[in-house]
Length: 126
Image (cartoon, rainbow, N blue to C red):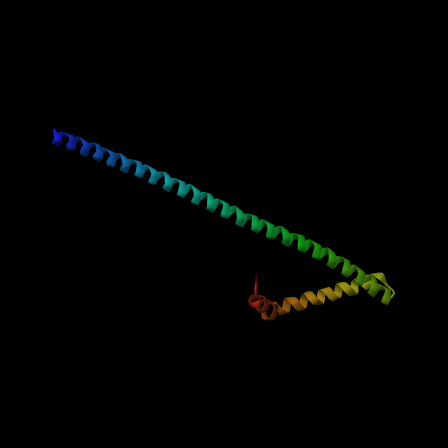
């Protein structure tokens, strides 16, 4: 009788061990699934963050470029009026300022490969 009781207990313990192993495996699978879902969500959030940072940088660059061009336009117009007053010809002032800017563009074009591009290649970007 004692042997039958022991065998029944061993079978119950064996079943409980198998059952426990199944439960542990299911828990492990659930945790692995949760980990993978969290990892995918993290990568999605990281991608969105990089996209937002890129869009923000582009928008800031466009705003800066537009405001710089407007400021340059006002400065160039004021300079043209001032030179026009000096030479007693408004049109002459505008032509002189335009000629100056054309000379600056030519100088930049000529120096582009030898001076300007090497300078910007060594320029530290933050």
